[in-house]
Length: 219
Image 1 (tube, rainbow, N blue to C red):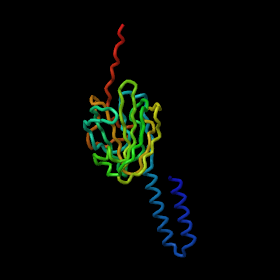
Image 2: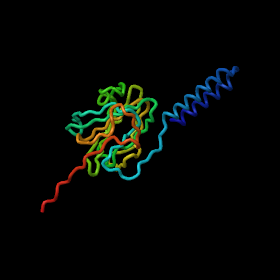
Image 3: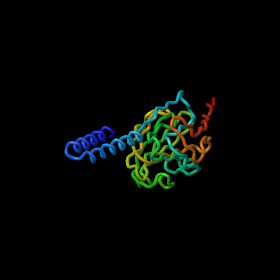
């Protein structure tokens, strides 16, 4: 997208400088083009942050933004049980790249068409266009992550695939413009962030998952 935008701006400014006798309009358009391209570069940035080690049992903040929801909900689509929902809202000033929240295997991935309401509204979690990503961890249960489009965002990009083994902090996808991500955790998870807290992906740990005790083999 950035390459296409750069080509269009270069062509536009080249035509204006060649065809218009006055330099004021081409210069004004050039300044606006530079500012617009700089804003676009800033928006599409992908900070380089990497975790060291496996970090099994910990939940990574999957994106930069503000924690707008921490509440117990009944998740009926995938788990049919109570879960703790943690939601992160991305403003236009946040990096909109998304990262994998936990290490494990992607057991389900689906894209759901929907509305484009403001992403900070509670109803956006299930009414807006979104992508469902269910990840099964080795020893700490299964979580659900949602990439949710907002009022301006009209495109969700997901890099991972169903059946893929993923590591915490690896690239998950991208949501263009203002948007949101929801994470549904087991109810006995230890939440390590607070409401209205600003978080950073691959820096902030959202929660610690409970370890699943495997049944002992009976002789």
